[in-house]
Image (cartoon, rainbow, N blue to C red; front, side, top):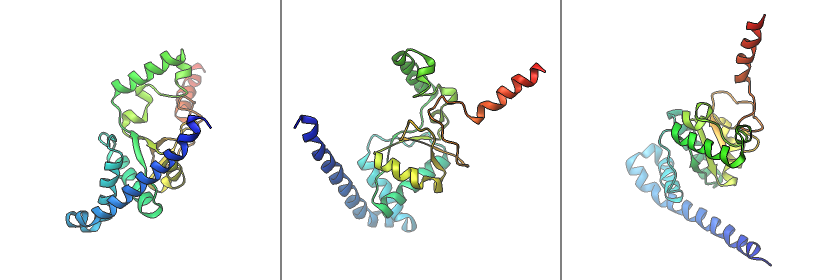
Length: 195
């Protein structure tokens, strides 16, 4: 047995232990949250516990609708199904998105290849504050099954972690740079001008 095989069970146990500890902390926080907001005690306790479990997540910069959808969806996942959902990346300013895009262009050697993994700032849902990269994979699966009730949809086949807040369920694209119906009016305008 190699090192990778021997470490897998301990990683699974660690994730289970962390999830159980997070649930216990949330339960212990409910009375404190009740003192602060009686009608929202379970919701607040969940957010506080998940904030402790995922201390690096940053919810700032998300649109109010995206933030509300995400926090309510993960509270349901947490209390109803015992599923933890953390945020890996949410809002990014245009400069950060440009840096990530330029890095991917350098790594892949072309803009076309980079567009399969990341978008430039003017096309990115992260810059608009509507995109969420979530973890763990089980949390993303839960969100894919249930997120539509909150307006949260997985939008790319090749990114299990990427969800966006939308008023209407979007057509899922194979990757971020794939043409979508948003591109159609520009193409139609070009042909219309040629007549």
